Length: 460
Ligand code: NDP
Image (cartoon, rainbow, N blue to C red; front, side, top):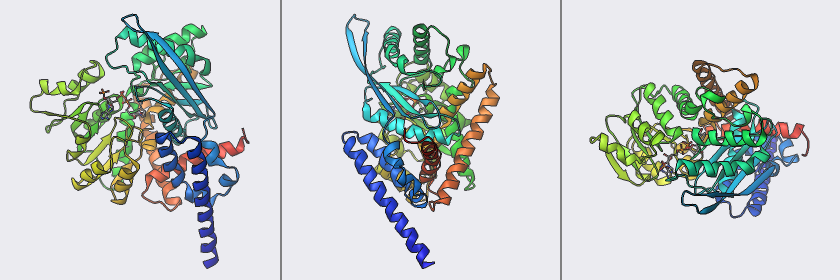
């Protein structure tokens, strides 16, 4: 018994040493990419128990290989604005890992986009896509273009120029982009149209998040938000809790936030606060989602305008303050690192019971650790927001069979997938001595499938 323990300790130490060395290699090669390094560190650290038990991953140098993108494309996006001025932006696509399927991941248009952000998102996407159980690899893309305040013509002009270059690298069996921040149904439509014009053929499965009229899937628009609530409901059920009768705070008011609010309300919760990048609203009687949708989904307006229609609500400038609103469930659905340690502490002091990450990496590593160490239920992004890409994969399946499933059917499949992701993450966490730590569980479950496929396919 003592020998066994000693052997296990040695294995754990070798795994730790390997993780430190592999991370150092990645850090040296990408020293200015803080978001990417943050994501790599979080995942590598959680894999120690797996590497200790399966030294084959160390022998095959899987960590160094998985953290190096298969391909990174950086390109110029020139376009002409409404005043006739020539503008130039920078476009990116990272094709990170294709061990289990073609590259799949969204496109983000936001001024903050750079190589580090695209690589952090692409890296996380490898594990998330694997968790869905669908045959899709990891990728991500975007541009440092700010869609705010742009006319429809400018959006089309930019998006077409973006696609002129990106189309060389994508295809239904190669790389299938979708939406993300700043890229919704309108932008996907313009991208699809331009791709079709350049290629001269109708590849329905080359993009997901398409309109229902031309190959889109029911439930894709709602999928990330609904999936998040399905995941959190499942997590709460295990503790005898539920959305029913709970007070909920959701940050953001974009695609993920809107449909998380919708499903939370359908499950009997009261959503009292949401935000945009300028500030947040608090409506103690429950937010009127139809107003928020009118302002933010269809209106390109500011969330502050909500109080013009609902004077009983209050508007506060600044985003971080939203986490001081007392709630049972907090769903950060806006952007990366939007919740820090201090905000987490306030939520805990106010009695929060569950956190579900709708955005990618919205909680800093310290904030996440604080929730986990305080015994608060914590649904990590990679698992909790995988509903969007899962339904994207269902859209691809419908496109290739030329069938259209009903809304009920896609929604039922989405719920099944989210439940399965939750169960897989719980099982992996407990099998590797990290019971209750879903962050580790989802990293482990997502990693092993991809790593095994990489080993099977040789050094390529
Ligand atoms: P959208 O562009 O539709 O919405 C983003 C929302 O967040 C907007 O309301 C924006 O405000 C707000 N916002 C931006 N920064 C802040 C901030 N610091 N504080 C508060 N609000 C802020 O994007 P999505 O909803 O599609 O994406 C949101 C997150 O979810 C991202 O992290 C994305 O990667 C992730 N995600 C999205 C998926 C999808 O299917 N769409 C799938 C999986 C993950 P404003 O209106 O002022 O710009």
